[in-house]
Length: 290
Image (cartoon, rainbow, N blue to C red; front, side, top):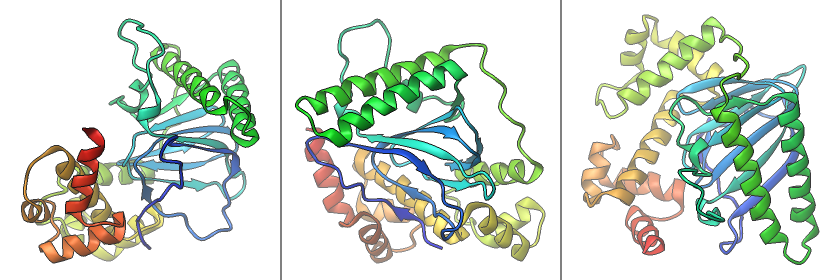
């Protein structure tokens, strides 16, 4: 099972995408972990499922809303009996502009929230968000004059609703995780904390979890839908992209410090995932920021 960097076919001049009222399909092959360079909002209309985001596993229920920052590793799993129905909004932060100065308000705050990616909407709040999503879908599919402006305005309204939900103190308690889900969350957090440790192997992780390697491998794949090597490679790829963007370290240093073993393997893996070499990715990204 692979972990993929998903390519979103958006217009470079308007980096936005909407998938409206999508049903999770449990009869398909097991969905895989993926990541992309766009922020993502997922709102669940009905049904159930599980959502893995980075090192956390969340329950998907009616009224749950997820704010997923660009390049976060994530994967959804629909419940077999009651698969979720959700809407997905993808956008790059560049299209979110402050419409006017408004104190310390930041529309992108939900993507920086350190306490988790999910919130719960009340019935009225969900109805309001569903109305906005319906309007978005009309603008997205209708291609009327001013539709892009309308979509940006609606996106701001949706982000405002999510921000206000985040600041409320009467949020409903989230369902308790099962024992196996809590165990897997602990494993994913441990991997995050020790990602660059050269001892990070199946045997090492199994010893930390006090189980045998075969049991660990089987449980990890059943819970996450991918093999441990594929998961580690994706996490290291994301870390390498951060270093390419925000440091002046050499390509060889980044390859070594992120656990790729050799520069040639790093080049091969990076080009396969990102569609370009690490050096070209750094150059293009920095040109876009200048």
